[in-house]
Amino acid sequence: MNILVLVKQVPDISIIKIDPVTNTLVRAGVPSIVNPDDLAGVEEALQLKARYGGKVTVLTMGPQQAQNMLYSLYARGVDDAYLLTDRKFAGSDTWATSNILSSMIKTLPYDLIIAGYQAIDGDTAQVGPQIAEFLNLAQVTHVSKIIEVKDQKLIVEKKYEDDTHLLSVKLPCLITTLKSMNTARLMRADLAMDIEEKPIHMISLNDLEINETEIGLKGSPTRVKKTYTKEVIKRSSPIEITPKEAAMRILSLVK
Amino acid sequence: MSYQLYLEAVNDFTNRFVKPLAHQVDEEEIFPSDTVKEMALHGLMGIPFSKDYNGMGSTTKAYVDAVRILSQSCATTGVILSAHTSLASSPIDTFGTEEQKKKYLSKLCTGEYLGAFGLTEAGAGTDASMQTTKAIDKGDYFLLTGNKIFITNAGYADVYIIFAMTDASKGIKGISAFIIEKDFAGFTVGPKEKKLGIRGSSTCELIFRDVKVPKENLLGEVGMGFKIAMQTLDGGRIGIAAQALGIAEGAFERALIYIKKRKQFNKRIADFQNTQFAIADMKTKLEAGRLLLGQAASDKDQGRPYTVSAAMAKLYNSKIAVEITDQCIQLLGGYGYIRDYEIERYYRDAKITEIYEGTSEVQKMVIAGKVINA
Image 1 (cartoon, chains in turn cyan, yellow):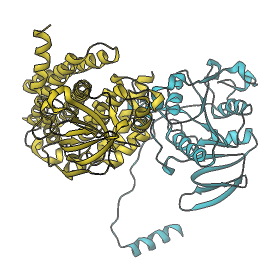
Image 2 (cartoon, chains in turn green, brown):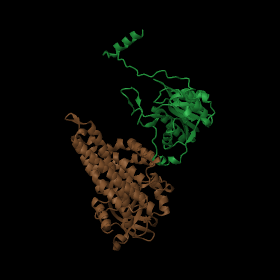
Image 3 (cartoon, one colour):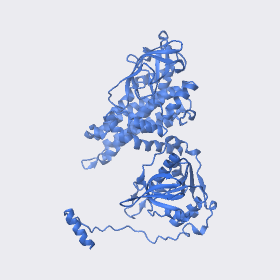
Image 4 (cartoon, helix red, strand yellow):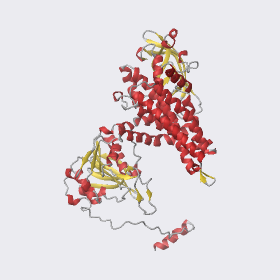
């Protein structure tokens, strides 16, 4: 089966610091990593390939240095890699990004598209579902487990806050994955040593059938009006009572 | 780019599969078999050997960097890879026939086989010419009898490079090398030695009682054993130099974290000049050790003679490993002496690097011999 995995290079927020004066993220000197939900998707794709055969292709949109991330995925065992990069893509919101990625995906063979649930630097969780809409595909978000592929259907578990749904979805489809679903494999030292032999397909605007007015800052319907640091106002205080009394008090509040 | 990614891969590997186990491996004297399996899956078991035999097709430099990085967290894991690569796989790569390479090297490189090397005997340590293990030519096979001691990876290895006298009257020119499989009838492994350091590493006696060794398992030619052993140990010394440097680096990194946190007399101990001078001295030694190691690896990779540079790299790095781990314990004071703080393990692990694969005295003999007779 042909599996496309959408990946994004993000700053490692476990290391990132907040500038105490400006209250913004200090990005300088912070290493980049593969977005964790996306890396879980790559792992699932490689496991599906091991079970059913096929090919795993990763796609990313980003600056030139995102090549390094794609090389690190080659070292984990993916088969092919695309980098969609163009100055004209800059400023794209999630809709424009999904539009660009979809126009690329339309040219590739696939049975399954996997996207991470959300990126740790944006937390929008919009790109995966929007791509499914652009491509007119069935989608399952928040996938916490892939059970199997059977009769051209993918059987998955979808995670809710307090329960799990077992779903069957016809291929081709798009799913979004959660980092908690697996522990992604590490790079293999021997594959890492050989990455220079691996091709990265560089795709620019000219290679895509897409109108310049639909991408970048101008093609993005979303506008960021303001960013600010949320004030944390501590209003709650703990009350020590028995569980039964607590239940009664909550009930009276709900009523 | 690819080399950077390779180092990152080895680092990530060490952080996930080696570092979390290191304390337990030492404390309970566990041979880390699962880690060895993972090393195989991550492509680390045949770094400097040709892809024709399933190796990585890379360099001695890459191999010693792997041993160094593993040893920063666990010297036991470092020496398992070093003995496997330098002492078992390398002589087959250098002296083996095409058939031997296909049969053994290609499986050593994938990690399907683990390798070991047996030269030392109870009465033949530095003086390897005192071999009493004998291999008698019986026409169709050699009959091997004798005992080897202090053999790294013993009991876990599948393939052993064993040295034995084929003609005692010829002295060192009567020694030959053989490839011995663990399942050869008459070959048994003694109990695990209890050691000061690298306690997870398996060190045992090998016992050969009338072991029939097929003719095709002779490595090199009859009488070439001493040359094979010496050349193999030259390469092995680069691996042990890397292990020693890794031990020193690992202890240094731990001490560095501690001195920035620990406060006495209302300041960090890093703010005392005594600490700063110790850090400066150690860092300079580490850098010098790294350069000597790099020189030896580069000499081997470029096809230049490396006997002297390998001896110097091992002599120096094993010396600073002992010195630096000692000084790091001193910086941690009482905490350094407590086993849970792990620094004392580095101190115990460092000592062996001055002893095995040629003691420091042997390295000096090698270096002085070349200098004086040049």
